[in-house]
Image (cartoon, rainbow, N blue to C red):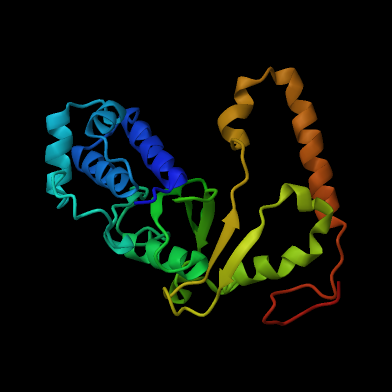
Length: 252
């Protein structure tokens, strides 16, 4: 069997990341071990080292996911049965932002990258107040960002189709193009899920609120000066009109 080295390495990396988690759960370990197995990692000793457990635990976890190591006929699994390391944020039941299900995440990624691609992980990111945002890892390619708008019935009048407005603004923001993520796909059809969504490239780095305080305070002025320059560049862009793409429009 030809083994996809990238998928194999990614699966082991996710397993190693699980070992360092504070709130690691055995059922997540079993899912990640199964994902690593289906990605081509068939050495039980290597899996045990990656998961920091004994070989017997690896056998038990794989068996709990329907994998019998001794069965040499079971060499591949359908992509939809491959475990996915899914980590949504804990939210109150009545929270405005609502997570996707595992099947919905996989369906969106399949629509964009093709049916059957292996989705390794989907981790929901915080800080935003409108979209539900995920960092998604896919076997054999770079991680991407999936942003999902609220259902139409949950959007306030001032927020109607806000993601579509954002997408429409991209051609006007070439002045800051090197700082922006690339839009890989945008889907307003609601054929896959009943919500607008965009898939974008991942920008490396750490959000300023998480790291700025680690730098000497006397260096902050340079950061805020640059932030002001970027803001001024955006404010200097003039489009044909002002207002939502669906109208009404006003003179710019």
